[in-house]
Amino acid sequence: MDHNDKEELERASPKSSRIQTRSILDLITSNRRTTFGFIVLLSLFFFGLTAPFLATMNPYSQNLSNGYRPPFWVHGGSFSNILGTDSLGRDLYSRLLYGFGIALYVAVVSAFSVAIIGTAIGLIAGYYRGLVDAIVSRVVDMWMAFPPVLLSITLILILGNLLNNVILAIVLVDWTRFTRVIRGEVFNIREKEFITSAKSLGFSNLRIIWQEVLPNVLPLVIILVTLEMSIAITVEVLLGFVGLGVPPGTPSWGLMIAEGLPYLQVDPWPTLIPLSIVILVVVGINLLGDGLRDRLDPRLQVVPR
Image 1 (cartoon, rainbow, N blue to C red):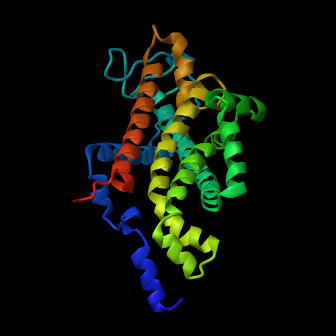
Image 2: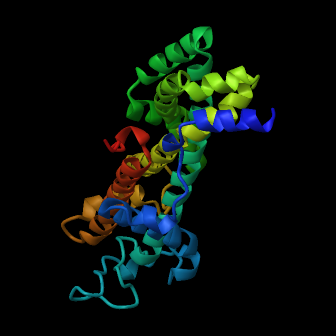
Image 3: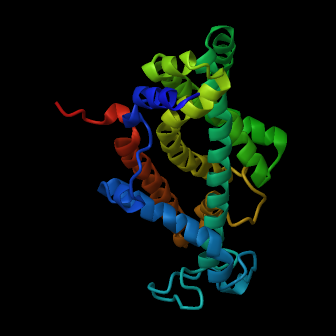
């Protein structure tokens, strides 16, 4: 392909639908939702990665004589257990920190695994259409006919209570979400002028998908990845709450909430503290996804008259 061909393809490509070069700071501060959500996500990464260094005690260590300790700001609390202890005398602060690590691991691995699988299938189905799209669409429709929560629980019952099995269950359930959205977006992109120009220049289908289609769906992929992280955390918490996520005793937020629930009237802190953290993290990441959608989704951009 000579220089003139490259210029022709560049003129045909919709620059407005690509991720434009912008400073990270400008994107983060574009609106309050994005700023707050980014702070929450950054906190998730920070506490999740530094939990072994910030924890003051072994999160699994039990001391029955030290159970039901309230946080330090409540009468009877102490700075030795700043967030108190649970019914078994385990330090809530240390367990909460290690819960950040579990939530981060589940969110990142699940979201990116779902993104890779769902985006790849969506790109192929949306671009090639025909029989390929028909088969993918039928499989997606049948798979999405099952209630997600029920399907996740069924998969965990089959696979067993292990953290990696939780991630596998999330991936097996949620890949259809990515596939449907990306497939629909590729349907629209496939009819654009720059795709026709690429075909006329002799580009192969795989090259067009990789170099022209994929960059134009990346903003949507980023948004979906962000939202999928909050979904993955929610699913892990729900499965842990019903005793199907991780092995008993693991410092998972969902398991912590479930373990503290029977003692709610005696000592509400082992339930209220992790529950508050879950709500904050999930809402924050969802707000980040909404804010990024406003900035990155070309369909929501206002075109000046």
